[in-house]
Length: 414
Image (spheres, rainbow, N blue to C red):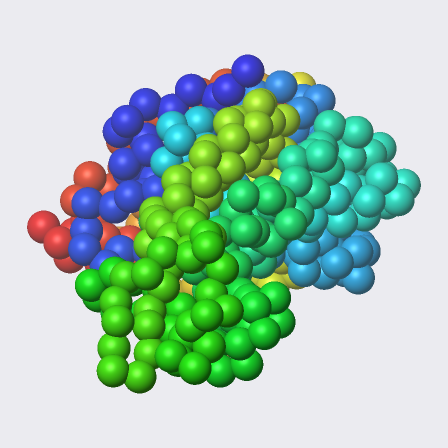
């Protein structure tokens, strides 16, 4: 299914890495992706070009569609830019190492995936419709994350305030105790003052016996039997009640209990999210594919690349070919000198290239290989026209020690 490239070819063509510091690779030139998983997939596509006609034509067809429909291209890009690295996010879910902020990021990504699905479904392009059919915005888990998690939670679960109000009754009650304690105490004070007829009743706190009710000696005969006297002062007496003692225990342990409940609820949500790993992984792959194809469309517009013709004939016909990396390194105003290459099995099976040092012999060899490779990746190519017969292998033994992207030939380096 894939073209065969050995490690020497990958190195000599400087596809994704270069032996020279600061050298520009083919990946550096082609990478206009919006998402990290798109960039990772592009690297794979560069070192694993296709060798079957149908999938190559599918990719070229989608790139051509985006080139001809710039408005649709921009609509897709608007949403794909917002998706982020869901491939890494969902892998962290599987490892149970995903933070609250990352789950919210996943939820937002799923919202944009739904928008991409709708755009693809309405595009009238058969390949995009096929992608739309496979995209799954996972509405159930998205809505659950939306419902249960705060919209801007902390990065770490232990920081607290992760779960929304209204999800768990105990959590809501404990939060009211921990964060709305004064209101609760005012309610108790008001209720007890009305029940006992002691208008001067007040609730206070000290470190010795916690919360207490203070009653002046004038009203001590109105104190109910259930109150427990703790302290007698010159002008007043202090009492505790079972309710106040229970409240005190609650407020002192409330934050600890809140954290335990939030951890439990968050883990339940994370386990539920883990059941969506497979569909979200597929979403990630499909979005990465779209990202790469949109990247190719942008390159075609920006760099004046053309759609190659791919066939099963033993022919290579490149008109006005350019080296995709070198042409981007030229000084402003200087144009790349284009080259034609024609090979077939009948009239021209081999070309001998001669010329002085630094004339560009290595450049045209690499340029030809890169144009074929780009065509079989499904990308448009730097040429006026290109007719490419399917290739199953590329071998190179060229410019062993040059630094072509910096204009240093084998001769100059040696």
